[in-house]
Structure formats: structure tokens, C-alpha cells
Length: 122
Image (cartoon, one colour):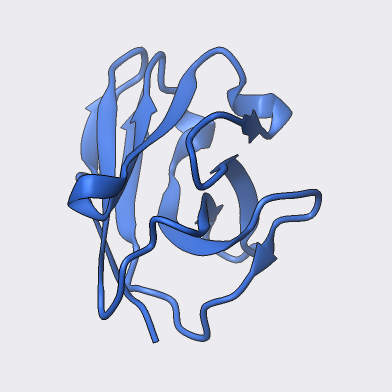
């Protein structure tokens, strides 16, 4: 299994920025695509962004296009989500996962991390 730990969340004012990190242990994730998901209170988890194993391909949900950037550093076994121009509706717990790049993103890891809370105030 792959253990995933999300970090970098916090409280930020609307228009601000945060960079989330996803670190993996247990095995390398260099051959997997990586995706970010988020979950609002009382709602189901939703897809946010994905990046292929090489970093050569990315895609995003429409609501974050132009504001969020997903990236990865395979040497560090880490993926990132750079979030800019944050809006209150971005408030959620953010999770990362590994899997197969595509639509939909296919999750290959059995376990989820604890996520990291992002709160955007007006």
C-alpha cells in the first residue's frame, strides 16, 4: 500500500494563495498518476485535478481552471497543488490519491489520507 499525507492547508482570505503538498511513503509513486480531490461538509468527495506520471499531462475541474496548478516532483515522491485566487467556495478538506490518468481518474490505492483543511474567508 501507499501511505499518503496531505499538508499545507490553512485559513486564508479570499484572493489569497496556498500550496498543498502530498507526500507518499511505502513505495515510489513515480509510475502513477496523481489526483487531488476535495470534500465540502455534508457533500460527497469531488475531483479537482490530476497529473500524469511524467507530469506531461494535466486536467482540472472547471471551477478551478486558471487558478489551481497541479505539479509533482518524483524525486521527492511528492505532488503539489498550487492554489491561487482562492474563493470561499474552495473551502474543503483536500485529499490526494494515486491511480490511472483518465476520465474519470481511476484510483488504485486502497487507503485515503487524513486530508488537509483549506478554509477561505471573505
